[in-house]
Length: 256
Image 1: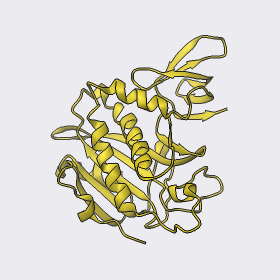
Image 2: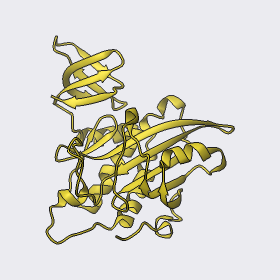
Image 3: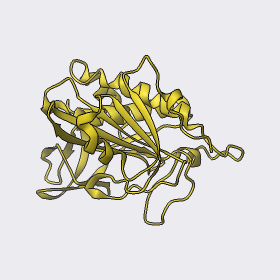
């Protein structure tokens, strides 16, 4: 196992201040607890996360030293109502970083996951935190890189597993992490003026476009076919009665 190296990941051309911790309960929780005393742009990676979590407080379980688990402390330069775009841009950045490093074609499963071969490869969780200096955003990302085994009840895969190589035992994570940090910085530039161009690229990578889905929302279950994404990246559904509905949030989305 080649460990993550903060010296390699701290690139002076990028706005991130990277720290690598050996073990932590949760990188996102650590950033939220210490946000008031940390500079914006702090990024925390860990080799082992004992209480990692995703949306709806689902556990994020990963073997030590195999994958990429990190969180970023951000202050998006946009009105608060546009901050949800960060998740969309981050999903696109993850796809582009993988595509640049490996011969794989990841797809975005709205609103928070990345898939390969119809299995989850990455998840994102964005949370706001209030400090004396105002609101900040903590973005947590987990990416399965070298893990080979997953619990039977988890539909997941890893980059190494998807490559199906008989000779490759490990992907070098520092190169991939640096590529990812660069892609995140690049995509975050589209938060306001050119977000439409990012949506066009997200549309090309959608795992749900054209599919029948079941969405669990605070208002109840909803069934429909995904016709398109709107200008904010939300799903435009055609319901069973022929009408259309724009799905702006969901607790769970599944293809049916």
